[in-house]
Image (cartoon, rainbow over all chains, first blue to last red; front, side, top):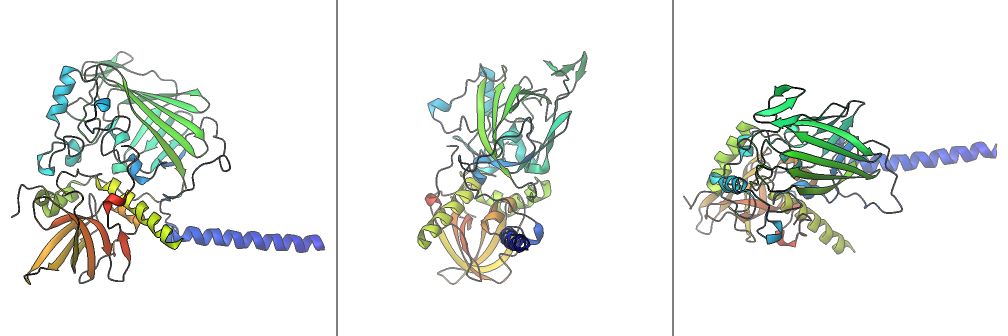
Amino acid sequence: MPNRVLVVIIGLLVGVVALAVDLTAQNNSPGGWRAPDWNKPPITAANREPAPRRNLAGMWAPADGAGAGTQAQGVPSKPNNGRPENELPYTPYGLQLYKSHHALEGFDAVLPTEDNDPRNRCEPLGVPRYNHYNVRLTQIFQDAYKVAMLYHYDNRWRVIWTDGRQLPKVVDGGVDVGGEIREPRFFGYSVGRWVDDYTFEVQTVGVMPDDRVWLDSTGRPISEKAHITETFRRVDADTLVWSETIDDPKIYTRPWETMRLPLRLHDPRTDVQEYYCSPSEQENYNKLFGSGASSKGAP
Amino acid sequence: MKSVRVIVLVAAIGFVLSASARAHHGAAAFDVGKKVVLKGTVAGWIYSNPHCLLSLDVMGEDGKVVRWMAEGQAPNVVYPVGYRKDSFNFGDQVTVTVEPVKNGRPMGRILAAVLADGTTLGVANSSGAPPSPQQ
């Protein structure tokens, strides 16, 4: 009999705690539409959980906060701030191309009416620029054959094949897939493999030519000759470190690392607000604000 | 303790706003660091990509009403710091702090807002935000 009383008391306590947790959650999720939690406690030895084996699935976002994935000043490992240590190893063609890009961000940014960023025409950004543009909530799903990434910006998705297929070879005008010449793509052709139980490596080739896409928001170039290597390292249950190196001999004289971005696991039920590039909304914004704000003088 | 919490909250909001303020376009058009406090009547509030836009009728010292346009960030950016589709309604009396554009037009980007019901959003001093970890 005393045991039954004890069970009832424990049950009530659990219920009260669950109710409190639920009410707290509701404050951040009206009607169940859960908002992102950008104030998570840091991962410490006390709350660190082991990483699951060969698993990237989840709702991920920059561990250092909402602004950490913006990358407005260029790729995180080499911000475009004019400092000598952040100068890139351009080929003569790469430097010429960079100078032809008039970006709204970075060391030599121009006014909004003077830019030629393909983003402002709502062109697809392509890989790798989706990795460097307002990375916020990024969802990853996986099955036995592939890993799929859902980018927040412009609701774009990407497939990385893990079924053992070969990485195509870069050739003039596209890629060679088993002797067949295929077209370049905004997301390229990606294959991935597990280097160990917690490290997933992705190779991408066959991206769009350099007159269609940029590397980052400061106008750094990338070309169809690029070979992009990404590494996703699951440090623990809540932390994934996303690194990227590009090897593009047309634009850069040597491979270089663009980012090492720690991501934090978020609640899988988090509502992802749309962040589309809509041409009509862009036009309306330019009409109401962008053009006037960047004109040379007062009316 | 309460004041410390307020400072931390304001700094956090400032970080989110300042980092994302560079998200869509650069700072080249803005007089960075300058602040203008506008008290006026809401004429419109567009909660949309790529930027939210607030139009505000402000009475000048000469008695003339000037319509200001102030931009916020995209909804997915400003929602976590409290800006909602109905934060501003036509006819509301509000106070908005903006970082003005350089060219002298009545335009700027929202650094802080005091809504009609007294709710304070954003941060009054962007320089109070911690530096972006990527810089």
